[in-house]
Image (cartoon, rainbow, N blue to C red; front, side, top):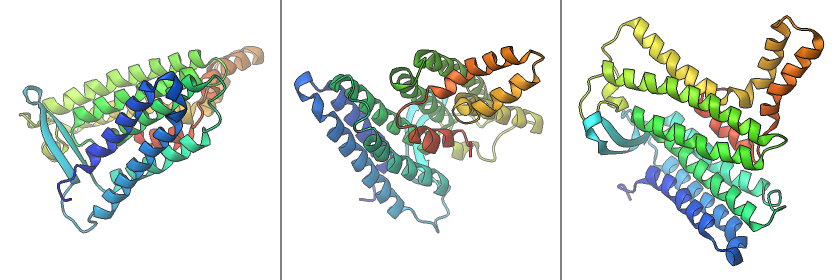
Length: 288
């Protein structure tokens, strides 16, 4: 039991569930919802087991840790682990996912079982990548999970959003890609100023070993902050920001309203089950 890779299992179970749901033939598509719910509940059980095994008195930086070489030539490892904050966010994601599935149980069946399959499979993929984001203890692995998490979000918005959802999905993708490029620069800079080596991206190797000036470290922090905030600010702070920007632009009221309405389209194109967006995904950006 002590060697059970709980964090990896919490990613593999929803991914397998998503594959099964997506691969269901037409005459079995009605099983998509119970299979997806079952996979999310198994993930929740694993999260609660991880919570029970977490030792609040331990001195290690990360618990339930798994470290395996991935691309040693570039210092990249598959490394996952949790501290108290990361584990709390993982448990929250595991709790909210079945709640979102149940909330959308009868809301995505307007176009038959095919639509249900897509929605529930994407939600499971999203859960797996959220766990990866919260559990990653390798900076590059964190970047991979963070960017991968945007893929199901893009399709959820584009397929299940409100009016002009395609426009909103493209806007979300553009902001996310811009933020991802900024983050990639900071990720590479972190490795350059770190100790390097086969495990040069590990947080445990980087902690206290960054050979950079205070100004350089600040710019690296700004890069991560911009990337995280750009990816999700539209989901939380978009409406208020649009109003402030429109009010500051020297246009007449008619043009201001048109500008605000155009950008607010992105905000209005929310997806069914947006509890997951606000409750979990936004937390990856540290937005409260």
